[in-house]
Amino acid sequence: MPELPEVQTVVDSLRPRLVGRRVVAARLKRTDVVRPEGFDLAGALRGRTARTVDRRGKRIIIALDDGNRLYIHLGMSGRLTLNEPEAAMARHTHLVVELCTRDGEEALQLRFVDPRRFGGIWWVGRDDPGSDIGPEPLGLSAKGLGHRLSHTRRAIKSALLDQAVVAGLGNIYVDESLFAAGVHPLRAACELTAEEIGRLSRAIKMTLRRAIRHRGSTLRDYVDGAGEAGGYQAMHKVYGREGEACVVCGSAIRRLVLGGRSTHFCWRCQRVSGPGR
Ligand SMILES: [Zn+2]
Image 1: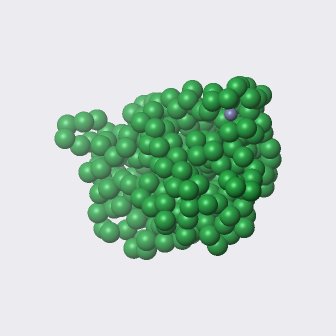
Image 2 (image 1 turned 135 degrees about the horizontal axis):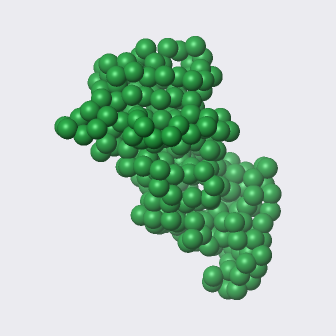
């Protein structure tokens, strides 16, 4: 499922081709992908121009020239792509936005496809599209992260998946970050030492930056705004590698299920007990 690096890659690939284009028409093929329910998204988009395209957490935020904003969440299987109008329409295309020509470039269509429909389109108007989620991990200090984790006894894996604690991380990058930091996924979040928090903070930033550089991870559905797959999946050290050798110590990578989610870790490199216990 798309996480921060994938969403950032989609945003970066859409921005140069989308900003400044006026919406000629929008066709919503499934109304239940839009929140609030019953909102006339096609009517609100018609005649407007995309002013900015940004990311907040796992949300793709599009600001319009009238000051209104909407965000798209890709959920599990969502894709937001710019296509030539004559390109074949994928199944489960829920929204098609016809964009006019710009600076002599051809007309394009912005298409939202989501077979599993865990994603959707949220119209937020003038409200802050990120007011209900935690801070961005790339801008969060180790102290700030430690403060946010100090209030919960939940497993560190579960705490980092909680978008209200920190926004943008999902299953892949939490597992990879915990491995890079040498922290076991079941450790209680509030019991991590300052040294461990420091390692974790650095590991999260390093993992996310590398994944962004490699344009995210494609496991099944994810593609960027131009329909291209990512390349970071080949560099995963624990995620999806159950039974394979740890790149550091050679032990078999293990998998456990926590809160219904697969968790991958190295039992030797990531210790259950904290230092000094
Ligand atoms: Zn290991």
